[in-house]
Image (cartoon, rainbow, N blue to C red; front, side, top):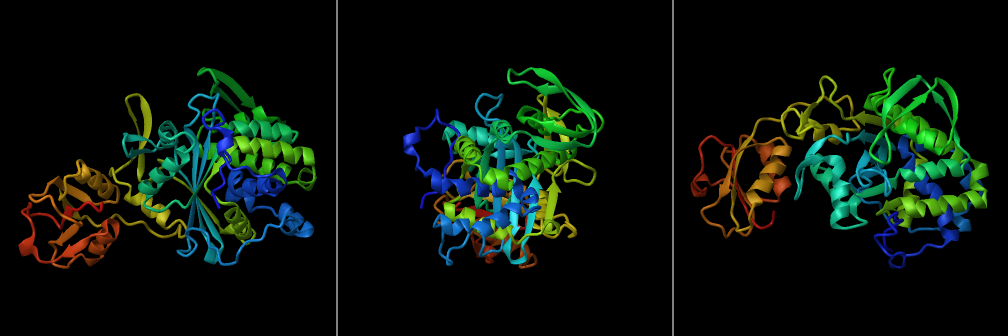
Length: 450
């Protein structure tokens, strides 16, 4: 079965090229997509009114949606499923393909746990073919190269940055939220702090002023989105933490309204939601996988969700700077090792992240593939290795990457890690090692397998 592609780019790809899904079949998927993607697992798993309703009316059986018990989700065998959630403005907005929201959701099925890592849009990372760029540009560059598949390139960039596989991605067009909220008749939100934002962006690249008063507010789509997107509010509402908290409020209110039993039984509302999501959601999930995620979601309690925000607070591995008038977040040691460790141990937030043991390596290109040594050096630096020299090997006909251990076995753990990262062979016969500088731990001769 082909992955479900609910594309929001009708002018870039012909609708006739897409696999059609009948409305009768698609209705239940609307709500499952809302569960899994739009409202994130933190919001999804806080309530079960729709779950109970689904069980009561046996919707799976009604629609004949039964799947093999032998199928497994990607990453399930390793007990960690990674999903990248992307949110962008969409066509008709400034920077339509820039992802203002990037959330890495990891699921640990064996313990029914979820970890959510908010990736800052200003994080600067090395991007294949583009040099160092803000991570929220990845989807934009991917769209420019392959319209309709920018999220795939964004997933590849995130995977390389954090050194873990991205099994699934879901991309959402935030402009569709406004229509969704209006279709549902608005939502009620409690505003914790009154604030004014004098620099809220307009669609014509200008600014407008938006303000909100403390207390319960009935919000239409435009108001709710302004409340969620504001970045420069007064009264302490100008931080990413405050913005994230407001977004959660909007999503929770939207979830309650969208998944209410009355909405679920309304043909008109379901039809409107279905049409909306055909234009605003794109994912590589297959239909059976969506239902499997629903089963997992039912087992997870709110207290088993860990939220992590990567920012530049004291003690963080990131710092803020301005380069060429652009605000950026960069790793303090110019590697992503500490960030990778934070993500790696996302289910163990109490674990102390220790600095990587200083390991010095030299990289030589044993092929005629131009730039191979440099690209490999960037990857290893991001993983915390100190690359002291790169260059070409004397002989450039290597068939496979070889690592020469010059520590005489004193750093076996690091050697195993390098072998895992590079898929290399190991040589402990230093007498056959090519000429190199003396003060290094490992010499890496690259083959075409990199």
